[in-house]
Every structure is written in C-alpha cells, then in structure tokens.
Length: 294
Image 1 (tube, one colour):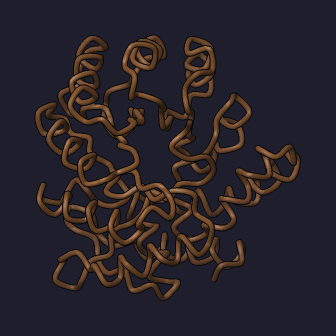
Image 2 (spheres, helix red, strand yellow):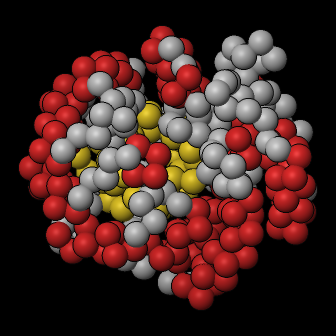
C-alpha cells in the first residue's frame, strides 16, 4: 500500500524575524494544509530549508509535525544527507518518532557512484524501518539515480517503495517504470510535470505549488486518477505560469515570498538564501493574481 496518493506538500518552514523556527506559525500552516485536502505533509525537505537547520532543529521540526498532524494524513520526513551515517541517524530517529515515510535525496556534492547509492540507501533502510521514497533531483545534487539502480533498490530492499522524480527527463522516468515493472510508487517532483508523470503510472506529486494552492493540486491529481484526464490536463496547463514564477529563483525563495504575499507571515529565509528580487516579485505577484489566489 502506498504511503499516500495525490498531492503531498513540500512544506516551507516558517521563521521568526530572528531566524528561529516559528512553531506557532508552523502549527497554523499544518492545519490549513489538512483543511484544504493536502494528502500528505513532507516536512524538512529542500523547500523546508533543511540544509540550514542543525540536526537537532531538523528532528525537532519533524517531531513537531508528527505530533500536530496526529495521524490525520501521512507525514513524510526529509532525512537525506550526503553523509550516510548522518542520514541513518536522522532516518532512524524520524522513523522511531512515528514518521509515516522518509524522503531521501541522493548524496550531494560527494556524487556517489551507482554502487555507492545502492550501499547508501540499503544502509539507511536496514536501520530505519519506515517506508522510503528515493529522491532524484540531479540539478541540485549533481548526482542522479539511474533507472537500473532504482529497480535494484526497489526489488531488493523491502522498505524502499517509491521515488520522487525531479530530473525533468520523461524518458528517464519511463525507463524507471519499465524496469520496475510499474511496481514503484512514482511521485512527480516537478509541479509543471505532474500529469505527464501520472500518465506513466505515477500516483501523485510532492509539490511546492501545494503551499499556495493545496486544493487545486489535490484536485488535479485526483481528476486524473479518476479518469477525468482532459480536465486534469487543462488544470496542469493553467498552472504553468504560476509554476514558472515559483521557480524564477531557486526554491524556496519564491514560494516563501508567495506565502508572505498571501498574508501567512512565514518570515525570512536563512542565508545563503536571499529575499526575492523586485522584478521577480512582480512576476510572481502577477502570476498569483492571474491564477486567482491573490
């Protein structure tokens, strides 16, 4: 059984003006997401600025989300690292805290070989018993999981069950599904390619767009899955200008700006991320207005 189907939100982490995590605001955002039909919470991923959290902050935020959501929808914890020992420890603690799943990005900067990736993911899976979703985003990590490697891991490691595919390479995704005989939970990692990945057997998306349009993304996925493919395609195309605006600078700079434009008061970004440039702020504002959320 899949950890979730539909739209999982790659949730931002709200900050206070002094750059501490704003737990009161995080609580509000979690409740809003659940109320607006988000199918899963992905906490402490790239969008959640996990790269600039201490390990203790990282675990504290994960545990907070698990406690507050309280089994209403699945909580998937981002626990990847470019150090296998660190990823093992984070994943083990998140699993023991009650995470419904783990999202594990490929090791960044060190750029492991395919055999290294197999060893890395296998080591984590042996220690952390929660279901694992691999995360392939070579534009950020410099390291790609090859389709044959995905197939090996899915077929040989019981609790590796899915992949978030953000390579942007549809052919690569098709090859993954072919080599896995379709027996892998495929999630789009790109908001502008949700419907194309669903057409290859995907079951959902891990979405940045869901931060600002949770019901819309949920509906788009479920319309496709229920057979209303033409309507889902129309929704995908309508969302493209907003998707583009949400990635006009590196994620999560634009989406956090969008949340603040919506009055969510999610605070600043931690360095080295900077606030959205004025010209991009205008682009984002226009896209949000045309989409009908501002």
